[in-house]
Image 1: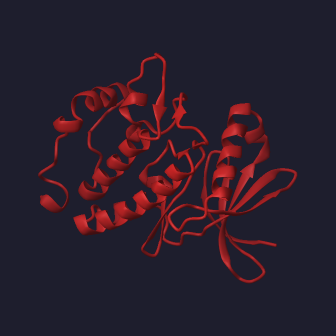
Image 2 (image 1 turned 90 degrees about the vertical axis):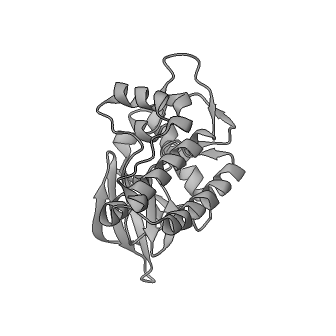
Amino acid sequence: DYVLVSELGKGQFGTVYKGKNPNNEIFAVKAVNKASVNASSKLKALFDTEVQVMSKLKHPNLLHLYEFLETGNNYYLVIDFCKDGDFEQYLKKHQFLGEDEATYFLMQIMNGFRELHRNKIMHRDFKLANIFLNDDRLVIGDFGFAKSGFDMATTKLGSPITMAPEILLNKGGKLIYSNKADIWSIGVCYFQMIFGDLPWEVNDMDDLMAKVGTQSGSKLVIPTNKGPIS
């Protein structure tokens, strides 16, 4: 029932298309290669959680799954089409945001996370590239690393640059964290919105871990040559 109009982007396991249904309504259609996902039980479990989370949630600031389809080779996820792309692209275009605009988007982020929290869902990979825009509406997406139905988690997942210290700095000890880890990631994204850059200039993982440990909290360096306060 869907015509794939054009390709929007490619990921590790599939391709996202702009699609149209018989009523000419526009959606994004994510085609996921079955063989790649089914090759690993862990990957399949994460994929199943992503499908479950997006099917369950119906909120203006969260990406919703309208339909799940399957062929011999692919799974197809019919989701919201966000015509203005992701927030990483938006920030590159604008360099940085004024405090009013950044706060406007932060309020939408918090509205989305309030709904996730209410449903006991941790995102675990929140970053600018996983935020999408449709006009001035912000939509949180990419629930591939989400954890559903639990207050605590023990798996080290996510993008290091926005990863909370309790996960990033864990060196093989017993790893236990809650959905508060997402709050750190939100803070990093808000910093990027205001200053157009990450809170730390890093060269590698060791550098990142050192600076998160020594230059965060009250020791966070606030730039004076970037963003609206330069």
